[in-house]
Each structure stands twice: as C-alpha cells, then as structure tokens.
Image 1 (cartoon, rainbow, N blue to C red):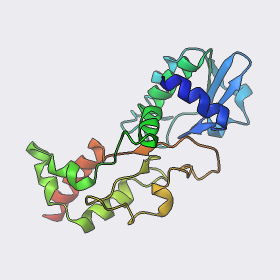
Image 2 (tube, one colour):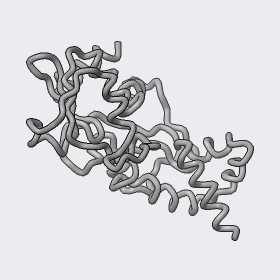
Image 3 (tube, helix red, strand yellow):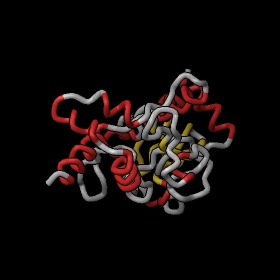
Length: 211
C-alpha cells in the first residue's frame, strides 16, 4: 500500500514534500509549512487530515490556489495526525497524487509525456496550441513553470518525444533536488505531463503573437 511505502520513506530519512515538512511525533505524525519550523509553538493546531483540504485551498491573501504546486501555501498552522494513513491523505490534499506518482515512476510504471504529445491531443479552443513552436514552448515553460514563484514540481518531460527537458536548468529536472532551494531530504514532487494551466497559457501566448 502507498501508506506503507510512505512510512518506509520517512524511516529512510525523507522529511519534506514541496513547502511541507513532516516528522514523526509522540502521537503519530506532524505536518507543517517549512518556514514555520522554528515557531511551531505559535501555530494553530489541527488534528484532522481533512483540515488540509481547506488549508491548501487558499493562499495567505485569501486567493484561490489554482495550481497546487505554486509555492504560496499559507503559514501558521500545524497538523497533528494519528497515523500514516491520515498523513498520506493530508499530503494528497496539499499535493494530489504526489506520493503515488513518485512511487510509480520509481518502479517504472509511469512515463513522462512530452509537451508535443499533450498539445497534439488538444481540441476545440485549445487546438491552436498545436502550432506552438519549440522556441515558443521553451520560453513559455521557463517562465510559467519556474520554481521561484510558479511551480515546485520537477519537470521530467521535454518538448519533443524522447528529448529531455535540457532547455531548463538541470536542477528543475532532477528529482533529487529540493525545488524550494533548500537542502532538505525532500520526496520528489514530479511533473509527468504539462498541466491544463500551461496549455491555457500556450493558447494565450499564441493569440498574443498573432496580434
């Protein structure tokens, strides 16, 4: 089970995922924002995995977080969870499917899907994104997906089939790198395929280029 694998990873020393840090506690597991690690005594305590859903929904200004990988989680909270299943459920609210995706990739059961394949599947108003050139795609991904303010996922897909994302900084495509810029033992937070928001941004970029 994924929960059992997660417990094993924690025992191996992994203690972070995205903006989150996780530790074992006397009563189970503790989950919190990394920037609060030295002020946890001031944090509001929650005790249900379901509380993670609401915490992850909005940023500190109250704006909806459309992209879960954006490094804008609110601070000032701590989740005290009684067992590994609750921890796994809470992590899925913050970063849906992150643990399962990493395990599947590690076991060779998931493969990255190149951007060209994703765009070639688009229909309707997004069909135009098939016209995105490699140069336009590289510029768009560099800006839209950068870790410092946009998305903390590690990109494993390239623009064309069988091509690695070598147009990005090497750190952005290395699962061993903590995308927050720290040196934590972070669980890989993988991006296996361009998201719908990037596809929408591609459409917008093309419309602007034809004006």
